[in-house]
Image (cartoon, rainbow, N blue to C red; front, side, top):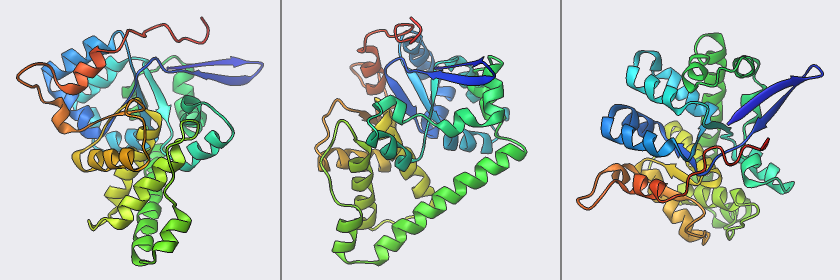
Amino acid sequence: MIRLDTRDGTTHATVWSEPPTIYMDNWALDRFSTDPALRTEFLGLFRERGTLAVSLMSVVEIGAHAAQHRVELRSFLEAIGPYWVPLTIDPFSVMNAQATSQGRQSACLSSAFLNDPDFSSKLLAGDLSLVHIVDLTRGGSGAMLKASSESSTQELCDSINALRSNTASQTLNHAWPQMPFDNAAPMRPIYNAFVRLCVKDSFTFTANHARDLYHAVTSMGCADMTMLDSHWATQARKVQKLIRMPSDFVKIYSQRDLFRSCTGPPQFLADLAALPPSRGLFDPSI
């Protein structure tokens, strides 16, 4: 959640999350917005717990797909209300913040999101709806955000493919050594493990994969529950094993975890329902 106020001519931001912090890839947002049963069950649980983590990259992707014409998605984003936080998509920013002993949540916040004048003016006006935040990504501002997002993903794509072309294992081990999980600074071992998997795997690595890699890395390091497509959920579970990450650090879900079983609700909803209510209990002003 975000609270902005102006004191002595300076804008101050207070950002906090009411657990669990949930990351949804765009396919998951589409699924929850178009499946009435899933939407109703999720929002019923979300009323008492949870905060949606949203990156500028995700917002740009939603805006690029003409969300203003997708009534169901707009309605779902509106129903999220103020219960979301801006997530940085830059793993190096998180690493640097964790190196200065910032907590997991504060290290993952997007300062670019909060400092953008268009976004901050909306927030200062009390307009916290994600729908209106998405609408700001259209026009001139949206074009710049999209160009920045595409530049970042292409840079990562080129970097991974350059590492693939250099088959010397010592190069990979020197640049991105395998590291054990570190609860105080988890992003570096998570990122290194993902890079190592991408370099060693044989699938064609495209800009789309680079974008998905950003989503997977940052959500795995910053969220309590993350919903990724099947390929990246599989990669994320491999990372968990490689770095010996505790199983309760982050829960990973893919499309199959939204299917109802013959014995109960989808796994994601069952896990969310098992968590205690948190709504209104973590406001730093209390």
